[in-house]
Image (cartoon, rainbow, N blue to C red; front, side):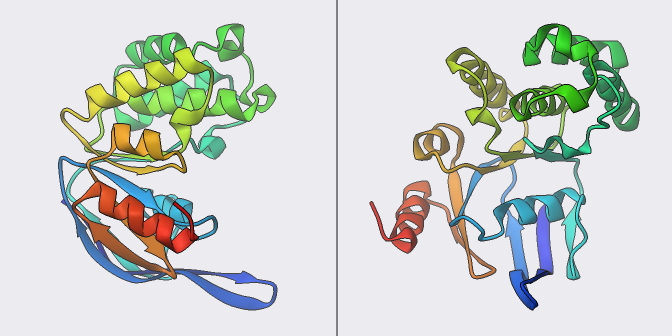
Length: 219
């Protein structure tokens, strides 16, 4: 089970408080891949961080009886003075998975060559995302949080990303943020749209996409 209970989050911007998540209460379906749509600045990445527990809400709570990944694509949690391999080993110890198996999986999947054994502070944003996606996909979570990561890299890497993601979805759920509608259609079963701090949920993915595009004022 994954549910939001009266969840709120706001920030101070230019001397005023802006509410981006406004008293959300929602039970999310299990065993489904949900698109999280919304205009730029709507608070999609903020919501993922709240669900992951990497950001504290102003009020309310996230309720879950399963494991939740960090927001895949967000490489900020890696220690910049450690190598990619050392970061992966640290994550493996935290989540109690086999260290050598996870390191081998991520090294092969991320495909960043010698950089895997260099400090993360030297990485490009794309390399950080590859490392983050590979590390997350190497661990079984009940719910994966994905933030634009499959757009990273060349066509071969994107194909590999889609393949491993599809395999994980056979036994897990996901919340996916992407501005790429073909990608959303490839990965997601249902959708929800975040607007003015509120979520509208659609069991029909095409209805979610249509509503989102109508809010943007375009096809």
